[in-house]
Length: 98
Image (cartoon, rainbow, N blue to C red; front, side, top):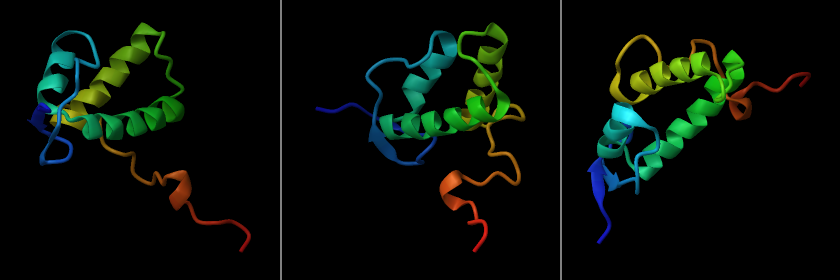
């Protein structure tokens, strides 16, 4: 039988993650409240955050910023976690020169 969670991202019951995807208390909270699909949505957002802010997952200060975004994205804590105003995904950007 597949484990499920009430996913805070999808707002429905969905397949649970197999293990905590991040260390510590934050990882435990994510494991208990985020589904595999919800985690996938975070990874998409994480790519944007890293690229837009020039962050490195090898840098302690960057990891702290990423964790603030994680808390905002998953749990609406703090001021981070939302898509920056005016941001358009590459696939949604208007075409130029037409």
